[in-house]
Amino acid sequence: MERKVLVEVSARHVHVSKEHLDILFGKGYELTVKKNLSQPGQYAANERVTVIGPKKELKNVTILGPVRKATQVEISLTDARTIGVVAPIRESGNITASAPCKIVGPAGEVELTEGVIVAKRHIHLTPEDAEKFKVNDKEIVSVKIDTDGRSSILGDVVIRVREDFASAMHIDTDEGNAVGITGETYGTII
Amino acid sequence: MERKVLVEVSARHVHVSKEHLDILFGKGYELTVKKNLSQPGQYAANERVTVIGPKKELKNVTILGPVRKATQVEISLTDARTIGVVAPIRESGNITASAPCKIVGPAGEVELTEGVIVAKRHIHLTPEDAEKFKVNDKEIVSVKIDTDGRSSILGDVVIRVREDFASAMHIDTDEGNAVGITGETYGTII
Image (cartoon, rainbow over all chains, first blue to last red; front, side, top):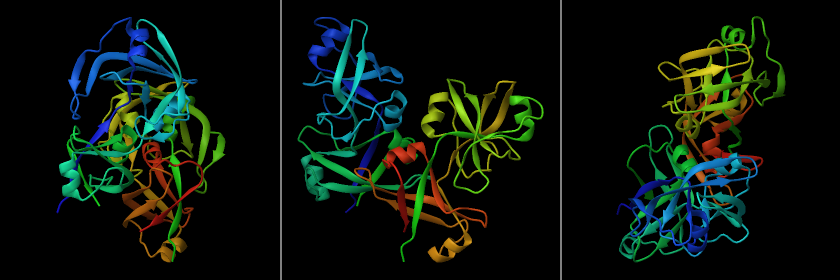
């Protein structure tokens, strides 16, 4: 049985809390949808912010909606080095003692003491696909990705299974470039 | 037998021809050594240039000496996207119909019609290590690199054997970050 999964490259982005959205864009502001993402209900917003580290800033960083409980900044290790922070490789939502930064929006700014992470490689799966692929939630797998010139097997990939997921693997831009991904690419869970 | 090789991450850099060095730094200028590299006779120079693409520029790009026959710019795919060029994944020296850019130095500038590449993963080996590892010049291998959280097997790695090499694998910053390399790291040829 072929265990093939779509590989999507996530560009740097920010998730914001309602409280921080109020500060960054003004009291009562609501995010507007620019583009729906593969995960149901998730979208890239039209709203963008500047993420500032000790060394440099990243302008025009997309906010992903809807708002979340806690503000979280997901960047690549290349970005982390550029802005001068040491961001840990973490699963989304696990931000305790992660890197600090400042976020600036049109109406105000937020000083985050933690929240900057580099996303751990992961695969979103529907319960149906998890059963079909014979893998479980939280299992660590490797994924073989064949490209022209940069074929790779990525290990340490965490499986996440949820009813409201669409099946897709997510890697960051460093990983996407390291594997030489261009256009629609599928990986094979091995 | 363990086929272990040191993994070195190459930052973006430029090799310059004598002719272009004259234009960029002034007639008769000679590169000065900042730091010797692992490959015998190769060094990072104190001299730096700006590499300009259609979208953006990369400042303070290190020149690697000594001068070469042809000027060549080696950047990551992240860099290529940033400055707005489509650079092919190539072995060093193979620049025919690669990407164009402008290079600016303190004394002048050079308009390259080709020369910008993304380096193909490769391993420099001494003839002794090639024999010990049972691999040949130009052979394509895979290398397993274990790190904390981003373990990977990189395929499409070309072996290069030469008397004056020091044995080491070279990957670019996208690949180094994708694999999560920090500090001295060894890979295993598989």
